[in-house]
Length: 244
Image 1 (cartoon, rainbow, N blue to C red):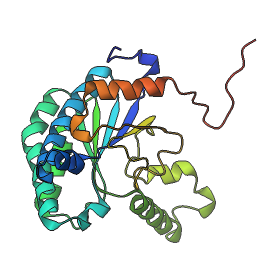
Image 2 (image 1 turned 90 degrees about the horizontal axis):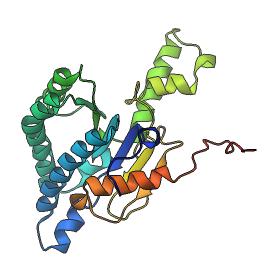
Image 3 (image 1 turned 180 degrees about the vertical axis):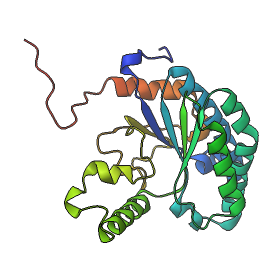
């Protein structure tokens, strides 16, 4: 099977839940940190593959609002991995015309981390190839709550009428405003849930759950998921057009 699908069958926006780093490491008698390191390598492979396949938007669930409940040593390690990725990879991504966008709640994050996010976004803002969206400190229910609060403030100050609140208005207040909704969501690691990820945006997304752990994911894994996507009959609540 070719890694490149026909352009008219390609998903514009692929979202991924990168799951299984810890289990991958445990099965090999390694510390969980080794799984997270290999997960970064899988991230690099996947970004390259997505760009080569002509995908427009790749959104990766890197750290959820619930992940803060993990052991503090693991949280510190994950944050350091993220910092290292930004320091070492952003320049190469910029040269490859990749635009970096970071979604999630930045309130309460360390100033140094927020500054790194802002600098990466500013450097790559005008790039026109793949949009790489990193969901960090992200939770979809929290995102929707922030959007509703912002809309409520507009209603309270008279700049928006309650009757004018539409799905489009809500979408414009989400972290993903301006991006197409995901066509395809992939979760690795064998679990079959979406874990508070892009709940609003995934109303008509096709889900593909793959058994391999995230550190094993590569271009062929992405191609298999896209091949599954291409076989789906997407009707968006309607009926497939009948042929005479």
